Amino acid sequence: MGQEAEYYKRYLDGDDEGNVLLIRDCKDGLILYLYGICKNIHDAEDYCEDTFVTLVTKRPVYNGKASFKTWLYRIARNICIDGMRRRRDTENVDDVVIADDSEIDELCARAEIINAVKRLVASLETDQREAVYLVYYDEMTVAEAAKIMRKKPNAVHQLLFRAREKLRGLLEEEGITDEDV
Image (cartoon, rainbow, N blue to C red; front, side, top):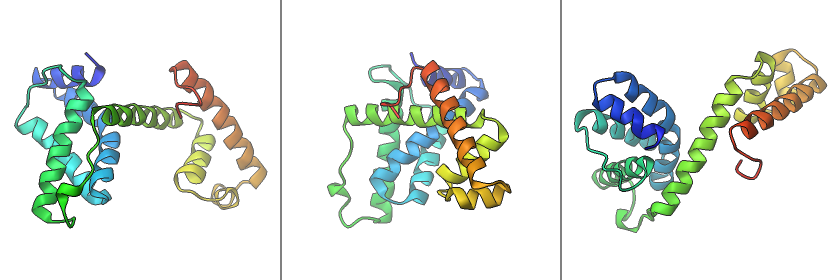
């Protein structure tokens, strides 16, 4: 049983922290997956929220036949498709291409890598983390980031270089290689 399944089991057994951990670990990947279906980030976020509300209110049973994330993504997919039918956001919702189990597993693996990178970026030194956020997340140029950080562009380049090297090492410790990223 995977970590997410353990979190859900903890929640079903009365530990609310299990639900908090489940949402923390799964929401980003789930939103990306739902966005791929509905093509609207706000709707994807709403459908993701509806998925977790369903887990809380209906408490569906995870039977272990598929991976927990595949099971969770199926619930989310059904909520998304039902929501799209109700809202008529697409011309013909039946024409929407839905990922099969192997694609869902691939998306789950990708989401896990994204979550690991986010977690590890948060562990960087303050200046390195700020440079990474500005350049890679906010898509600023090094010159723009340097102005905001009140540093010279070469200093920001150096911070980014050190951050990448540290992240590469931390990712390798977690078994994630350059090819995975």
